[in-house]
Length: 240
Image (cartoon, rainbow, N blue to C red; front, side):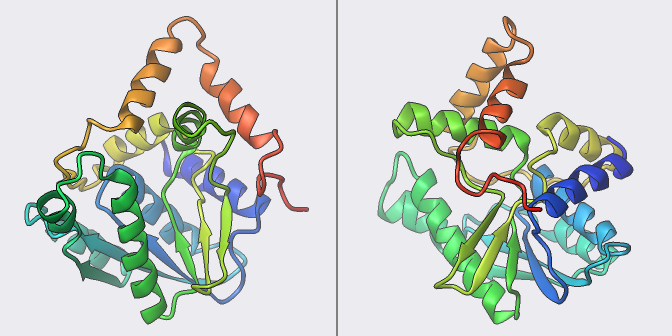
């Protein structure tokens, strides 16, 4: 995927849902994976010409597993001129050693978000950007249906009133295939996920299921995304 397409899709989502306002200080949750690195690129280059002026910072939450090389992330942020900070935590040891969680994803996500929110506020940020893409939207919908029995998905923009933060998801129109193409084209310094359950989660099961179902219905993802974006889910109606 070319940078121009990434910026076009990202800006479309930002404009449709009024994700950015003048004077915003946006923190990108930078895990080191392909999605968050692509989002950092998108917002960095969008910042150059977007009519509403905003500041940009990057935050990485270290799970404390001790097996993640962060130097590529540091080098990229320095090259882009984006301030970068690391939050060192013991989330990994708590989950896998102390609690011995067999299904740690939900609790891990809550703890990571808490650490990210706290650091964002400390840096003076009022907005946090998550790198959820179009495929994440679809997978989250099916996970809610299969495992929670409800028609639900995260929204493009979420207000965290108690934390005085706004969560935005500028890549909801960008497919995972787009992200992979961008990663390869720009040789993004992707860091290997240090989590020991990576690739063995419920989300991975749903991802594989969608892939198999697409063999019979190549338009499946389009239909599922349409069900979310054009349905009655809160927060998914584009703003005038």
